[in-house]
Image (tube, rainbow, N blue to C red):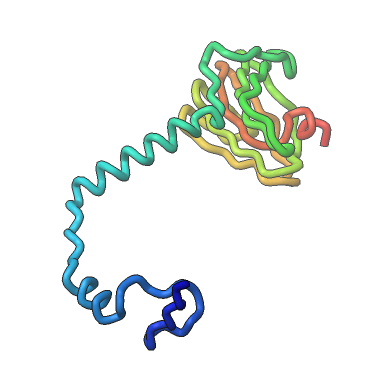
Length: 165
């Protein structure tokens, strides 16, 4: 029968005893210097890793192609295409036919609007392609109209909720 070896003086007895003596471990730590990592190689590995993560996450994104999704009537001369709806906030497109309008209204939450095509009028304010408008929550804004027609992107509450306030 073997007699167990007592722990080395450098070991406090908790956990397994080190395989190497402390002096040998210190000597090895000093003798082995890590090679510097080539910055270009590090960038390539990082990009490969990020592409793999993105490829596995793609199914969680939402993509709506231009021809996808139905256009729903909202008001005379105004149609709406829902892009995304979550927690009471909607992202949608509004297409206004020439001469179409929506009455003055308030928004139950901030609403962002970006004109994609045509021209939109909010009272005396004229917003053309690329123009942005933020309708603040609870603040009444004037009638929205489009003399020549427009396509706009909006993000905010359901349009029906805004028109009922």
